[in-house]
Image (tube, rainbow, N blue to C red; front, side, top):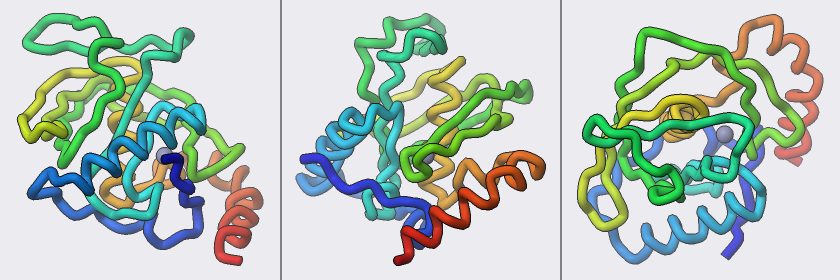
Length: 184
Ligand code: ZN
């Protein structure tokens, strides 16, 4: 089922997600619906907050993006990305590299808004999977960026918070209009 995506201005986007203790049918159904919603919207990631549910759950699929490469490493080896997408991550915890890089980001909760964001260039991810087991991997490229963007959502942090002040100033009018239309 395709769910409605919550837009900027809705308070749920600022809520920290509750940790998921038990992976029950409700969580599995939500994850399925979030994957469907992300695909319908042509996004590469979606956090539970963006469908109005503040819990530690995110879905990611960067396998369809050809012009921005990703790398996924498990147990020291680069794996075939498509075999692991879509990723469903519960209670994810990140370890960020010191090296950073800039890259363009958009967000399904901010239609027609994008900006350059500085992120760690690679990350180590620990999370729970839908089957209740733990997964660990390293990510580089677009996948590293997507994971950081989504884990921010799970903590109530939005990509505009990480834009430099010049970018944010240039987007101020658009952001105000979006916030206003969401609240109406
Ligand atoms: Zn987003």
